[in-house]
Image (cartoon, rainbow, N blue to C red; front, top):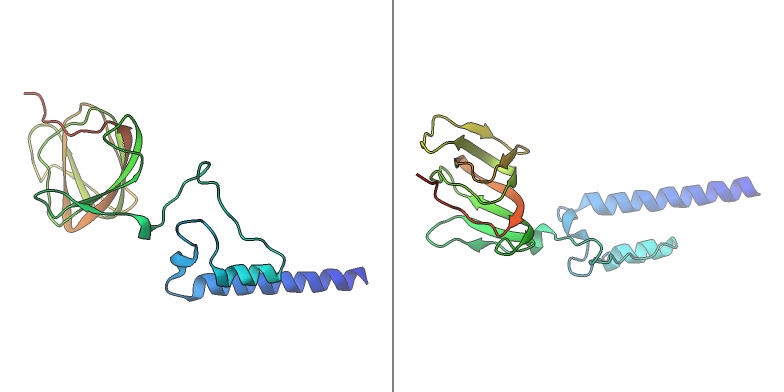
Length: 183
């Protein structure tokens, strides 16, 4: 009898996992499956899980905070089509921050420095990076999605975008600033 009970339990578990996989992967809005503000699993999924004795999960946002892409608030930059979004922290204050920067096609910065180290990951598009005070679009390295850059504090650099623009993630310690190089 124990063998039959174990087989029945395994079949139910396999059925539940199969249904969950279909629910998560079949709809085009799969990333929106989680309730964005509270961390709870949406009602349809919660009902399915309760059939199999599973409980809905609530995360302690003081232990692990998170944001979905839909929660990111993009802001325009004065005099530019570029946009920024602060994901975590505050780049104007002391402490770690994470921001996103969206730049349009063929957009270039002049040579500049930053007071603190910054770590950049290219999320989409192409970031063209150069170093030194002499701005030269032909003396750059192209970094595509997944490329990682370490801006070293006080070192002069410049950057631009390819024809498709780019989106990058910047992680650093605030307060963040952009400074003109010393001459």
